[in-house]
Length: 604
Image (cartoon, rainbow, N blue to C red; front, side, top):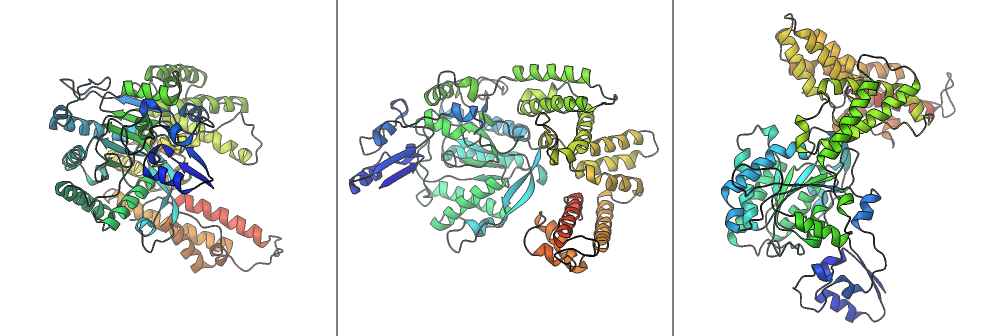
């Protein structure tokens, strides 16, 4: 018998381990963990003499530390902010005083300051201005319930930014934070309110010497006050998502799974926890941990590691925002689970180091490629792409630092113009890239360009300004701003003619949003009808096929549905020499371009 345990630091120090070893006579046991229990971080509880991972499983066979994982780019490094919340005076962004009394830490003034800081910095920490394609489950309740569970249906959708966990020291603290977030968000517009969930359970969630105990799913043993509060928080969740959970046994487990999936979907912005979700839970969309609890050793590394799973080039690190003085314990944990030099690899460099690199590269780049001068020759174009790509990568890292917004030496207007040039070169080189003619020395950071792009809502705001200023001289500058924004946006470049035609046709008094919706609806129908006629498609089936694509956010080019819209064709070719497979490829390409052109443009 071979028995393998994952996360073996969590469950192998009690009666179960003893029972297993007594029940089997011939066995081999293997344990995997990223945070083994050493003598230095062993707990004092449990009913057996087992205290360390080595006692439970024997000598180590192999070591692969967090330092190795970050060096190999299997996980991301961390960026840690230590926020002062107990020193008299205003909240500061660096070293926190080590005053650790319940009265001070749970004072209304301190909690109010922490919630205010979190709300003010949330968009920046979670990169809420960025967007990316993400696979989400669209039938969450049906695919997560215990009974009559359905298979999860996933679809690609564009989501904005990442999400976060807020870790508190106790159920009492979690309740206070939940109430304060609700109070401070009450006057925010609906589209600016964070979607906040909360979860805790009986007993083990309260703070235990900075170590994280195993999760429990027992809400029925909570004190009456704690259970009523959690039921009310779950009712808020139900109102957000149209669900019907509560703290009864089955429904609470379903709530846990539903909440987990919505975190992974990026449907929730923030979840307030005590211990839950701080070990063993992975969501690639999670990039920030706000911490107001004591953590140490494996509990600290486990909690921090919820944030550093790799997703895309926009997510460069796991953000840790600590409202307590965790720096000594962080240094000790990195030395325990890495080595004495781990800080230099596991933690991001300082703002000053990145900023100096950025400023120097930017100065050299703008001198080499001043705006307004043409880039001549392929060698110069390659140089532009590589140098601007390096600037994009540094800019992306710097955006997680609070200080950067006010110190960026590159204006937004110049940044737009350079992105536009970058995309022009990309469009020119793309056919050769797809045919693998361009060498590996040219790397396009299109995902990083997309993260700073504008959206249609922003363009419509500019259109509103343009119409208001039309004829007074300022309208020309606004018109130029619209063109710059369109040229610098990867997703709007193929819609540029639509927007510019709309701007030229806008009437003097009608509502811009209404007129835009009518304009897009008309053009969308007209262009599809043109494709149907040009490609000789089956009209009703083609309309239904595209309606389904826009509804579900994805063009289904595999399977039988695409074949239903094609005209009858010989497998070996028609009079023009085009085979059925060639016809299908061409129609798929045309409809993909059409879908990308109109997807995401408002019709209502």
